[in-house]
Each structure stands twice: as C-alpha cells, then as structure tokens.
Image 1 (cartoon, rainbow, N blue to C red):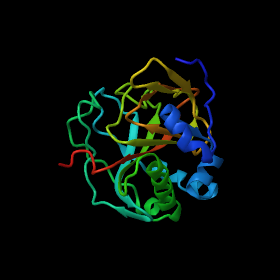
Image 2 (cartoon, helix red, strand yellow):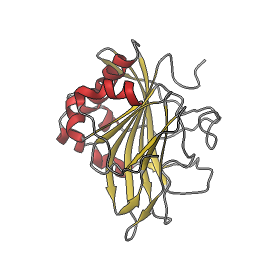
Image 3 (cartoon, rainbow, N blue to C red):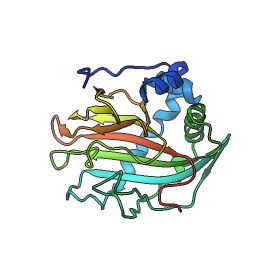
Length: 245
C-alpha cells in the first residue's frame, strides 16, 4: 500500500492511458466536465436530489446509515435509454454480504434523469470505456448513495474490499459534510500494489477497471453532530445487466 492521501489526478486526455497502465484513474471536477462535455453548474444542480434518497432496508449489519436510489440504462452510441425498473442483483462471488438476493430500491427521480447533464454524463463515460473495450452497447446501473453518521458511524462499503462484477465503475464524490474518514483504497486484483486517498471535492471522480482492481472506502464518523457522504456510482457492463441470463 502506497501511503498517499492525495489523489493521483489524471487529465481528461490521459484517462485511457492511465486506465490501461493502472486499472484506475482519478479526475478533478474540471477534467470531468471536459471528459463528459458538461457544465459544472449543471452537475451541481443535481446535488439537492441526494436529500430525497430512501432508506436502504437490506443492510445485513443492522445499520441505518445508508440511503439510496437506483435506476438502469442502456447506452449505445449517442443513445441513452432508461431500462424498465429492476432489482439490483450481485452474485455472492462479488458481494459476500448482500449478494444472491434481489434488492429493490426506489428509482432515481425523473427530475434527475430528465436533466440534459445526466444524459451527457452517462454517454461521455460510455465513450471513454469503449476506447478501452470495443463494445457497442453498455448496460449501466446508476446508484445515488448517502452514507450518514446518525448512528455514530457509517460504512460506504460494508462488504469490504470488493469488485462489482461489471466491466467499469465510476464513483463521483458529490458532497462531504461534517465527517471524517471515507478514505478510498484501490488494490491490484492480482498483485501487491495499492493506493489510498480521500476524495473531497464535489464532482471529482474515480474510474475503475473492475477486472483489474479491488476497491473499498473506509467508514465515516461525525466531526460534530450528524454528517453525511454523498456519492454517485455508475457501473458499466457489456452483454446485459447482472442477473440476466
């Protein structure tokens, strides 16, 4: 593990090379805007929707610290289509804690999905991933998460260090308020090397090649009173959604 808390930032034009070299890339918000052809103020306008997430009733550790919404999309070229609402499913191979069961979450609201910036975001990332893996169609699951400290501690990844069972993962930091912790850790799946850092800036981004790296985020604790950590996680998978077929 490399002891570095400052994220190793990549520019938008170096993302494919960085992903091929290391299996992950970290971008500042300005590079995200360039990569996906979006305006930062349009991304910021999505942030209030995190105040309307619903409790995650599936946590097997008995916690009440996670709220979320979940929707699915199919991205093909310039087309971004919302798929019929479906359960989120992972195998036990990828999620030993919550795998093997269908988890139904409330969908992401129409106000978010209908915002032009949402389509640009999903399409822009798909184009990047298609440079790394020649796939005409991506099956995207979108997760809005809020981890809070109302119980004193919140766990962004209660399943521990893991892969997601997809091709690529995008983790956006949306907001951190009144917390400490939440350090991101990325490990080689088949090697000894790793990196740790803390995403703090709104709309900074971690991109992951899910076959090559394992990731986790450490628990969060309140600085004073209740705090929270908001993220947007987009997973891209070729061939279909997890659980199909």
